[in-house]
Amino acid sequence: MKKLLAVSFCLAAFAMGAQAQTQPYSWSNLPKAEVPVFKKDTFNIVKYGAVADGITLNTKAINSAIVACSAKGGGVVLIPQGLWMTGPIVLKSNVNLHVSRAAMVQFTDDKSQYPLVEGNYEGKPAVRNQSPISGSNLVNIAITGGGIVDGAGNVWRAIGKDRLTEGEWKKLVASGGIVSENGKSWYPSEGYAKGNAVKDVSTIQAGKSLNDYAAYKDFFRPNMVVLTSCKKVLLSATTFQNSPNWCLHILMCEDLTLNDVHVRNPWNAQNGDAIDIESCKNVLVENSTFDAGDDGLCIKSGRDADGRKRGMPTENVTLRNNIVYRAHGGFVIGSEMSGGAKNIFVTDCTFIGTDIGLRFKTTRGRGGVVENIYIKNIAMRDILGEAILFDMYYMSKAGSTLGMKSADFPKVDESTPQFKNFYVNNVVCNGAGRAILVRGLPEMSIKNINLSDMVLKADKGIELIEANNINLKNITIESKDTKPLINIENSTNINLDGIKYANAEQLLSVKGERSGNIQVTKTNTANAKNKAEFSAGANEKMLTIK
Image (cartoon, rainbow, N blue to C red; front, side, top):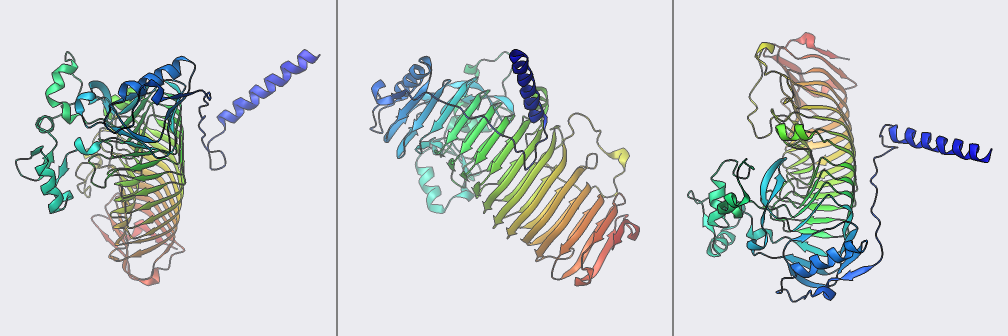
């Protein structure tokens, strides 16, 4: 009888566990990441010959400590206070690399210490220099401790003259390197300049060895921390700065936790993304600060056919209590999102001085479905472009689709990207170029976007192009340009509920014969000198004001 009860209890527990696993994610059931656990055994790099004189190359000593720690079942590899010069560090399973508070791990500017490897960049297999910190196919790994990791990125990156003061430019040119023929750019070396002139030079080609790419070695700037196909990853209380390329690239990993991480890159750092989470599952990023030269918190999942072949979406992600400064985007999905993205929750974040606040970008050829994205409690200030941007024309020209017939639309196939099912509420933005821009494709509109409870102060208002089922509720807009306040172009099923504004020259502009079913409710249209204007095939029957 006891055995029967025990078996029944186990089956019931299993059933409950299975039910919990299949319960849909929501704000009350957020995605979680399993955190690694380590033995307390400590391996001090000093005991392996490391010297903190800022000159001695400690590559062998640090890696030897990591190998020894992992071989004995894992534990902590301790980097004590001091300035530790090193080449590439390779992590191993069950190792917590603990960079002590006030310790600085300084990666060498000697590029010969970074051999060429077959890596992955911008969603595709690519030739790269070995990353300063890397790890592949590992379990239970961490970088912790409160110290500083510096990637010596300034010796790797090119830069435009327009991104420096005159004095900075003169000093940089005097230091060496190559100035472009038009005098507008500085390259770190002749090898970099050669690589920059060759299209798709980093693409891994059949029949070629890594030696065949040696002439362009300097061009293949490494991402600073690259973790690939790892499980149970923790980055905590550490500063990562001055990366040669992207700072943190987490690729095809499961159970990733970032807590109290700081990324510091110069505002003009070429491709200086703070963190790129690519094709990962079960992710928590919280209490962290990102100051980046490119995108801040970025979600990716591979590019074009390579990304679709991989078929690994980034999914089950929670981002909360984070701050982003100056980046190209505060929270970003894309543009390499060909494997898709879903079940992503972002809350209690602040973006200051970023080019765009919430940025969702893709383009024809990517494919992939981005869906079930939930965002709330976002504060922004001094946004250069859009506070909220959905754009399916990344790095391509968005020509007008007015007058275009369905027969002229590009064919919808696996390379056609999709954005749908976004829920964004409680957003405040004090200063932006534009409040909201939604720009879909004629063959694939952006669908089911729900934005509510917002106060947006911007130079321009709202623009909806090639969009379907867009719901804007309780949104206050303070816009300098109010002719019109809201522009709708070839978009259908648009619900404007409780739009608040002080005054407007024109509330709505409706364009395109494919626009329709536009509903305006609980909105004081008397504050507008002109309620609506219709053009390019649009007519008054498309609009209902209640």
